[in-house]
Image 1 (cartoon, helix red, strand yellow):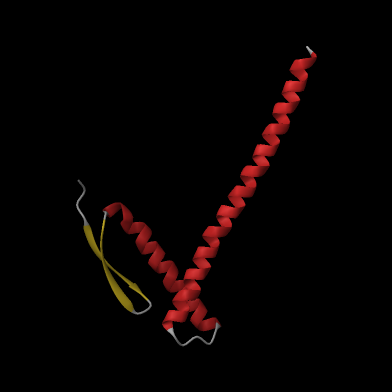
Image 2: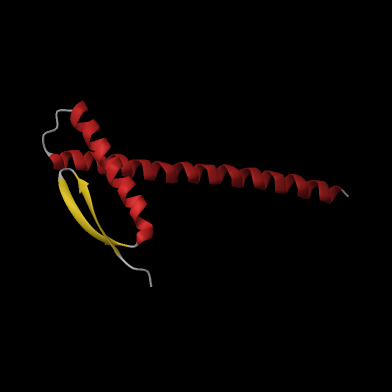
Length: 98
């Protein structure tokens, strides 16, 4: 069993103490850094005073990226399936002629 690691992450001027597996540390620190950078960008670009509004905008931005990747992958999968079916039909038709 792996030892747990205690870390503190700062997001939107608040510190969050976490107990995590060491393998999660890099990902969590990068995620916190990305949230901080995006929050600063929103604060500079828009007249947002409430940190909760900024964090909600960050959450929406990150969630929409994840959803869009899922949609894009689904479309890619459909295209690959269609091409494979066409290839399968072509091979099958060539085999029937022999």
